[in-house]
Image 1 (cartoon, rainbow, N blue to C red):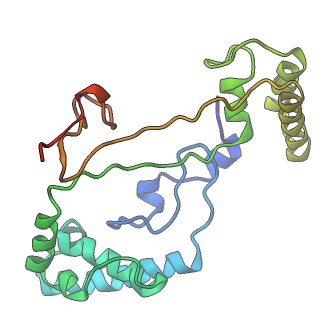
Image 2: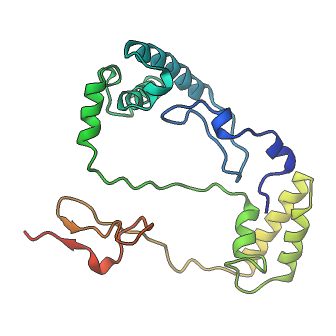
Length: 221
């Protein structure tokens, strides 16, 4: 299923071409789930500050800006630029951006940390309906003829207003027929800290959470 229309995809460029190659993204890019919003004024200001700071510090260190951004000092410069625009969000100093030794010292101190990244998918209504509701969906259980008919119709509807109405009607039918009940919440607990002997993180290849839970242990007091 194509989540963007042909015209929407034609208007996009690959992120590596359309976005500034910085240590930290300076605008939203799309993963083909939605049309990204234009770069905001504050994001443009961060990008401009980062380019200027990168040019200045890279020149002092005898390297290109691209090379500088690949260093710990380059990452510090990105945080400095964001602090300049958004306020003191990150604990970083201009000295770290200007002095590779200081930036490397900070990076080495943090090297033993475990970092877990979580992200959110902002999806169009039809993506969830196709997966969990329409018959034939990988997680759909049962089917509803009117919903299936509306789903097929909206997939070929070019008028956004009409398509929106169809999707809203599908959601109303899901509600009216009580097709889903929130009986549990998916939790992903992890254990990591100074008292943890075995966190379970990494025991299962490719799995980002503590598992198996029975293997998680604490250090003896």
